[in-house]
Length: 270
Ligand SMILES: O=C(O)CCC(=O)C(=O)O
Image 1 (cartoon, rainbow, N blue to C red):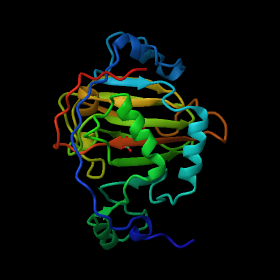
Image 2: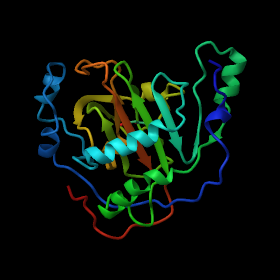
Image 3: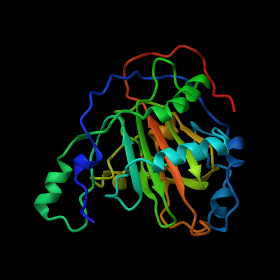
Image 4: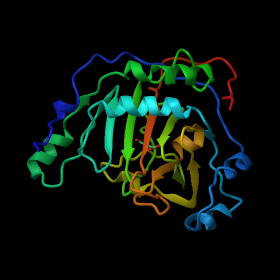
C-alpha cells in the first residue's frame, strides 16, 4: 500500500485561540491507591505507601458502555495516522510526524521540519467537552481545543513524557475499550523535554514511580505536579493484556495556556 504523505492526514485550518482553564481536581493518596489494580508485575510498587501522584485523579465511568461504543464507531470511521506503531489521530493545533524507519537522512530532516495543522476537534466529540465543563474539569471559558487519539494494541505503548508546557492544565485522558495501567515517574523538577529529541530521557528522576489502573470508560485528570513534574507512560507490550481483541483507545485533551483566569472553586464530582 502506498505510504500516506503528511497532507493525507492533515489539512490547513484556522485554529481559534483558546483560554487557559483553572478548575481543581485532585484525588487523595488513599483514593489513588484504590486504583492500583492487583498485578504481580507491579506489586512491589503498589505496596509502597509513600508513592502517590499529587494532582492526579481518575474519574470512573466517565462515559457509559453505550457511549464508548458510539465513540469508537465514530473514531474507527475516520482516517488514522499510521506513521507510529500505535495508530493515532490528531485534532487541533500543530503536530509533527515521525520519520519512517527507511527514511533517508534528507527525508528525516524534511519530515521533522514539517509543521502540520490538524483539523479542529470533531463535532462528534463535543459532548465529551461539554461533560468535562459541566463537571468543572475545564472552565467554560477554557474548553480544550486539542485532542490526540491513540489506538493501542497489545504490543503498543507510549514513551514516558510530560506534556509540552505550551499547554495548560488539566491534561485529561479518556480510556475506551480495554483498561490499562498508566505508569508515572517522578522528576526532580518540572521538565517537558520532547520525546522526539530524546530530551525526556535525560530529565532527572527521583526514582519514585507508580502504576495507576485506568478502567475502561474512566477519565484520568492530570494537574499540578502530576501534569508538570511526573512523566506518564503506557508500557509497551505489558503483561496482563489478554486476548487478541485487547485494544485501548485513549483521547487526550489539552488546552493552550494563557487566555483566561478561571473563577469557581471547582472540584470534579465523581
Ligand atoms: O494514552 C494515554 O492515555 C496517554 C497518551 C499521551 O500521553 C499522549 O498522547 O501524549
